[in-house]
Amino acid sequence: MNYLFPEHFDWGVATAAAQIEGAAFEDGRGPSIWDVFSRLPGKIKNGGIPDVCCDSYHNIDRDVAMLRELGVTAYRMSFSWSRILPDGTGEVNPAGIAYYRRLIDALKAAGIKINATIYHWDLPYALQIKGGFGNRDIIAWYKHYASVLFDHFGADVDFWVTFNEPIATYVGHAKGFFAPGLQDERYARQCIHHLLLCHGEVVKLFRQNLPKGKIGIVVDVWKHFPARPGNPEDEACALENNEIQGYGMFLHPLFLGGYSEVLRAYLDEHHMTPIMQQGDFDTICQKLDFYGLNFYNGLYDNAEQLAAAAKSEAAGGNYQDRPEAHLEAVRDVLHMLVEDYHLDIPIYITENGVPQDNSDDVAAMLDDQERIDYVSEVLRWVHQAIQEGIDVRGYYLWSLMDNFEWSAGFAARYGTYYTDYKTLKCTPKKSALWYRSVIENNGFWKEGAENENRCQSLRSRRRRREEF
Ligand code: NOJ
Image: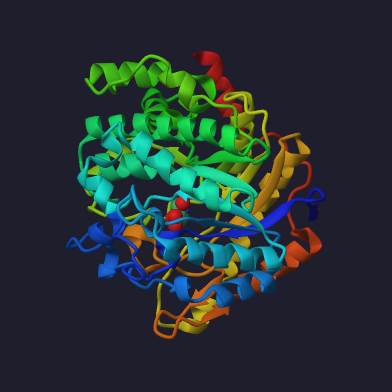
């Protein structure tokens, strides 16, 4: 079947500052929490540190040449807070501004739309010392940082994103395997509340400063389904993973104006309700111009298997286990956003991709048919959701090139270009050539069932909702 996408559909690739830029201690940049965390023994697979990464700081031309070669219409990037404001607040670093100015000018010269994230996990370490997201002053710090970005680049950026995957901040404070590496769930809940307030306040600021611009947020959805629908233990697992430990902690306050009943009951029972002020939820729940969905997989929870896995779980890892693929879940998630969270704004798939385990066999790394199969399958379901009326306006592949994959270091390769970390040369993989043709044709051909019925997951979700 031919999967043709709507006219003006954006095709892009995504990256993030801390994962590609390198130049960690150059030209006045201050350390981020990831520079510090990655130096703690055992935190990053094979001891990778993000000092150099793909060295994008010194390779704007290389990066933009790859984007031109792919023919993308949009590029998703992020700003490094500690490159702009080395201490997190106070003095602006002119070299940081100059770097992003060069990058943005090069992207504009190439006719590529810019989707820029203000915060993609790399808090200045100077602010972490002051309590980071646990300190309500973070709202003022974040507003100051955003205002610097708006002043310098406001009109140049097509899509502003306040936060990428806020769950990383939760994981970094509650579970310990992301920066800053704390394991205190109560504190993590407080951090998330402040993060959501940062988002709301900056959307308000944006409306005053750039009334014609577009701003949104990126929340990843790893939707859990009960492996055995109707089994109370599996249902409870899926509910907890979605509403208490997953996307629900963000989507409810962002789009429905408060924490869900399930989450409130849990926080109350565990004495973890964050300290709040009157009006906080009004601040958080701002009208947005678009929503960014990072989708990687759907998960099926079997309570017994999860309990057994938890016992043997090793510390560390960033999506390292490869659960069975349930890529059809993307369609369900898109419907859920509209039907359950009442989203009436355009949706972009702001990230989607699959890693390869690093190997010295470069030829094998370049022959990434697995990525083509994965991406085309996800796109097939996105296409179907569009046919069903969901307003998806674009797709960004994660990632342009192999880069620093957080706690998986350089052991996981997500790029459609292969990065040689010794020479910093990037080479297109098989998927890059395939993706270029998808972009060129605004779609692709793939064998697959036509006119499929509503998928099983959608049906079981409906049934679950009715039961509540
Ligand atoms: C989530 C994050 O936004 C990105 O930084 C990460 O590298 C990818 N997904 C893959 O794990």
